[in-house]
Image (cartoon, rainbow, N blue to C red):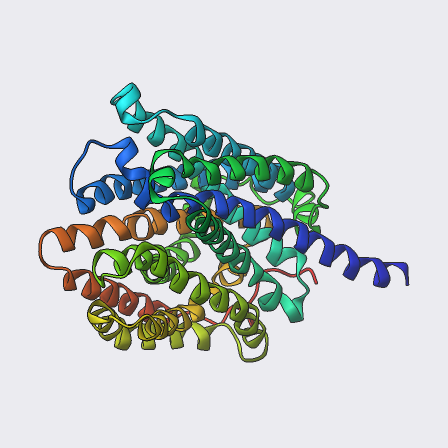
Length: 429
């Protein structure tokens, strides 16, 4: 009887604790994107706005290069030492990266060492986020009960989005309380300092989390230890399934979220303030609907949601972008952004649990993290750079087709794969 009372309480406490930490991790990651318009001129030589954004986007992409390395190192670490240990280490690295960006002088003070320091800080954050996704997705999926796994694991993206939303919220507050000059000279450093302090708080929260039963059971099993070789030799089909199903989903997510804020300014012609307001409201609604979609997957399965995303993304991505490019009414722009986010919800709300359900516990964190990070590096991390490259080359619509094609390729995977709700390898309830 005691177990029946304690387990739900501990489960909810652990999910909330893990989610809070995940939110701060992703806040630190997204602050970079949210404030790029202000700090790009500080770190790079003077030039037109698109050139400066291209340089900043390239550094954003460089951070993604470290994500597979972080996923590999901390995925193995989380499988061998525990999900709690992996979560604690990831937030420590994120703290260091944020503090470094907050205090690094600009190009006019230290020359080329300014962008070098920026790149190094993003490399640290890339390692952190690379390990964070696998550890947090695995932790939330393992802590959730069998019948609510889609619902509770959706909080992985709720906290990811809330981190982005928090970054935009800080941006709106600073825009309302500081002049443009102040923001461009020094105000942009404030959100990075906030992120570093919050990461310290999360470090202590995560030290108090309980370990999952799945990890404990794996420790006494006779399965081989987690490693990159074991993953791709013994579970190649699962690993490549994660990579393929992530490709279109993660590209769509970054195209519809982080890049759209700049698209509204650089292409549609909205002010930075109006763009931030549109994205903040849209992302808030997007965040709220994640658990609804995750809960729906507990009823009807994961596969229908992913197939729905694939079909709607394939048909509507190009029309949404081309219409948004010509939009001059903020309400119309908001409706188009919201339509894009509703489409990608079919992927974001359940992608964590789908990946976790594909792997046995002894290699689950690595299996979730490494193929996902590889897909993110290739498609997600380069999304802004590719979009801006097409724009600078005078072929902006090429990016719309690129996103559409990648969603279509992932749709093939969604159609062919088994529904993981019915064939889950997470056996503990």
